[in-house]
Length: 315
Image (cartoon, rainbow, N blue to C red; front, top):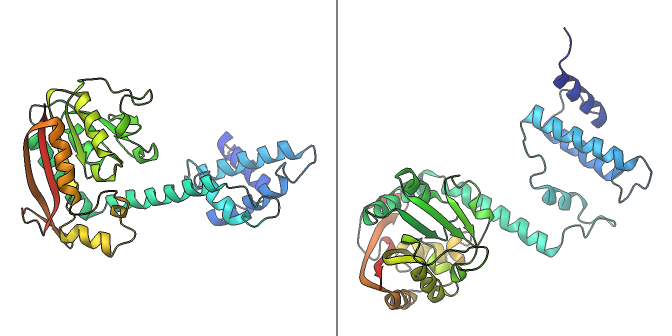
């Protein structure tokens, strides 16, 4: 039986890398790294180096895809390069401080995304979606500010809302639904060229545990009012600093994303509420979403409710 073109290409790729069919993923990566260093034009000045490194890269990519189902074998490329060559006399400065910060951010985001898919957080998101669906009845076009990976927004989309997500981080949209209209930029500057949200273009705007992470929340609220239609609705879910759930993560959990809050104190809540009242009428507030350990339940007890919710209509 004749070999297929695909099997021929894979066989040729193995020859280029000098590996056997039984080579493990880790062995392939180790061999590739050694070859990449040997033939990289930065260190190898021979005429054949340029073509050789291309052949090695192509072979590595093909093997990783066909044999190990790694569609993007260059994922975390900078990370392993730094580990391999960080103290190398030639490539020791390959990663800048900016790159290292970006890598650390990517790792943190990946860890956060993984945690959000746990059974516990799934229950939390479902409760938040149920609340928003109930309160935004009659609205169609919704802006969600600081939406991140859009777990809550997915539920809104599935229930027929047109949703625009705004987040300062492009990476935060990884895994977000394709049907989400994505905007990367600052909540304080929604009229910037990159974001370009028009006046009076939304029926409602929501902040799901995001407003406290924004430096100038007053400016963000002013911008939110601008993009809402007359009497457009605002729904802000604040993390309740007085609850056992939030206090635990602020005091005893250094890895919690809540550590990045800009306005995490109990006394910040009335200040935020006062800022909301500048632009919105018919204010309604309530405590919501009891959390104790892994248990999620209905309560309005300030000591147990993880959220303090503020609603209003545009003035």
